[in-house]
Length: 326
Image (tube, rainbow, N blue to C red; front, side, top):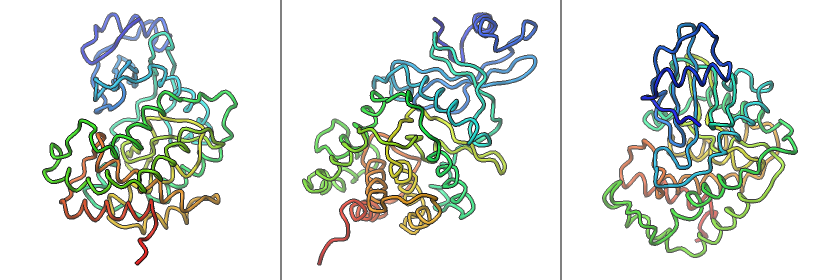
């Protein structure tokens, strides 16, 4: 068993790569460096005398929050996801070089100097062209017939369920939102103390944990959208599972709404998506995603005033519960 990071012994890593036949017998490892800030896993760029590639390894915890346990086999789910979608999403997912089940390591092509699309929060906008492409990729993914043996990925879903549908709505979850932004804790209280809202969110959470019929990415948000020049890539599929299409669409819509500060983008997403979907369910998932990103542990690089966050929370509440009757 080998655990890797940016300080790994080059000779030991080289030996492992040779055993896996991921490098040639005359090829030497020159450098190892972090390939961005991975939230869930260790992600490294390995440069050799011939090429460069990405190694991704799961740990028994969340890499960014190491006090949170996480299932080791999530890397296997990502490997199976890429293998399943390689043909239909050939231009949008990294090519697989190899998979080392013995060390929970996935070896993938190096996509080069990409950046994730977290910049849309700062720009407070997403172009129509990019939006259409993101929806087109999602439509293509959702058209893939899920393999009968695709992993349920239940442990990862249970972890995600807790952070999406439970912790952000708990009155006492041990996490003070004032450490994120003074006044945010008080702003959250009406939602944490709303039994009707919490009931609907709980029902949505049960739906998330149930089995569906559509292959999902499971974490379709700007941190998983990579751009290099005019090329769009989708990465980090360790939350993938077979569920309901509205989950992926709603998560995407939630982040676009957080960026643009309006729901027009939701209408555009539904317009561009190629299959019939439940618009109400999609809106509800979008609303939950907005709330959990404002009130949960998994915060975004989102610079907004308390007034703006108040408006976003009110908007999210309407998406989940429907317009308030006067």
